[in-house]
Length: 233
Image (cartoon, rainbow, N blue to C red):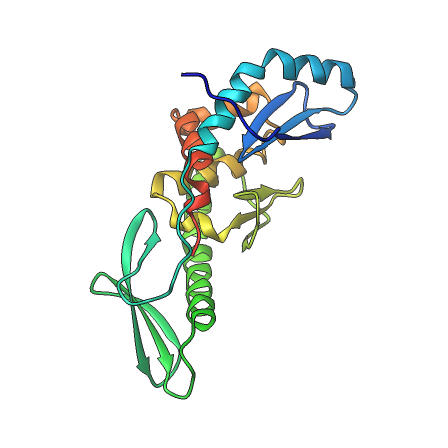
């Protein structure tokens, strides 16, 4: 069966001095092309032509991914944590609080507060962020020892289109939403960012470094591409 895309993809070219070879990534209906700073436009166009079949297949795959329904923040609704789903339980209490209890994520709303979607979401986000920084610090220190590096700092942020970042000075930051993913995926993102402290690029040397700890890193990358849009609350 022949399938065609009804909308032309957006192509974003990212030039950087950190790359020696070009890489292509499909994110949603966008094609991201990361290239060495001095690579000519003609070479980039030629690369896209050569990879056009692969790009079309990836765009079709991404277009067929069903977007999850928006959250309603009601009792019994499922919310993920480290790859497992927990049911939401909203109760009234003396003060605002969130905790895991008896297989539920229990959100306690102060009796003086009005229960609404935004309040419940804000409480959940703060709770997830606290969990994320604790678990990600723990995992970062564990894998840092294996790689022989010492991060300058570890933090979590609300990134829109990335799962982590490593500065040239060794500051590691993560998207807090990665804590919603299965543990293996969380560990992969940690190793991915820490490996940049040794190879601050995505060269073959870099991927060999990642592969020493995560031989199945390609599966993890693919999982994030396919399921990343589902990691939200």
